[in-house]
Image (cartoon, rainbow, N blue to C red; front, side, top):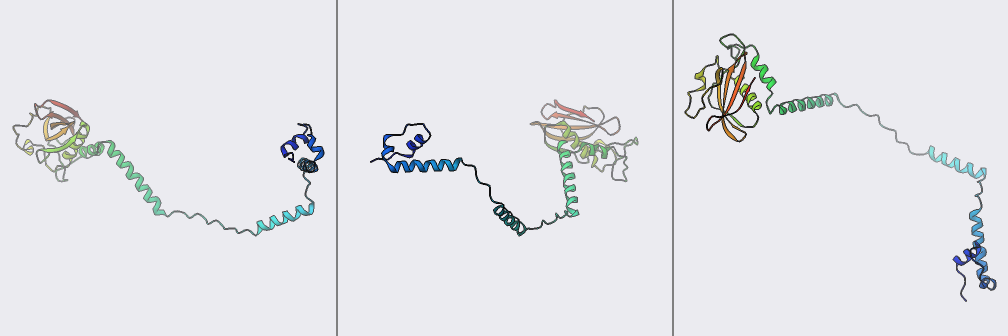
Length: 236
């Protein structure tokens, strides 16, 4: 004889279904229904509070375990050595200088112009112009090569660098060497103090630098090697 399953018995217990006729004639199913009643009553009943002695025993055991736990003391943080801070400061300053030089195209125009415009004498290894004014020196060797550039300000910085490093005593056309048939004519203002070559923005070109006023003023003309047309010019 098939017995009623727990789902049907639970529905009978909850009043969701009428008791089948089988329940009246089957002692096993009635016993199972009584077990379900006891479980439901146990679940619905509020929990009994623990006795004071039981609670105190557990609290005392927890406190004892806390007191006996292994505690590892924290080590004090050591101060970094003084040299570490100094090294960090040097790195920061070096990075700042590198960024400044980079932003000026690899040459610091400010440094170049300060060096060029300083009072100079021939005895001091720099140049004193004949009129006593501060100025620039001519390049001792002709045919300066300025490499490949696409910014006239970078070429100007290089020109000032070459001029400030010269040890010539006074500007003279002879220091530039004899003019070559392929040289573009020096048609700029002032005295020609440097002539060179550059690959300017993909064009073979010549650089002509002139000394102009005010004292230490420089003008450069960048002319195409073929035809001598003016590609760029800058005066500082």
